Image 1 (cartoon, rainbow, N blue to C red):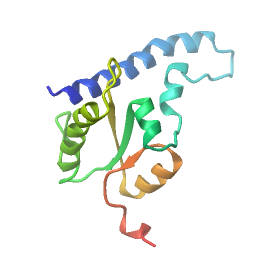
Image 2: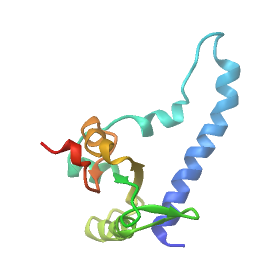
Image 3: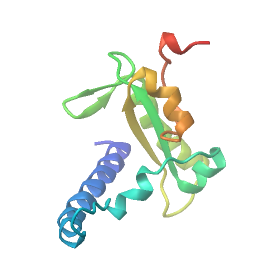
Length: 139
């Protein structure tokens, strides 16, 4: 298993652990009729807009990718395609170019539809849109 796959797997496991750890607690402690979002995930789900310097500081780069037979697809749980390969190579490159001990870069792949690539970027849901926008979105 490659280093980037281990990092992404670790992030997914941490998110799932946070969901399962907070679910019973929030159901018991919430007042009747009141719903409370898990506080551990709030930071991760918040839209963020910034430049490359901000991404370097956060050490996280979120990449919006469309599903495609060539560019990005899942094969038995493994990310495959040209974009997936390029993103696997991006983490070691950034680590080498911008080293910071104890704080590795994490490149998170966020699959989406083609028509949500640019709107997701504008809304702050991703930092990079790696794909071709839908034909209807051209000006």
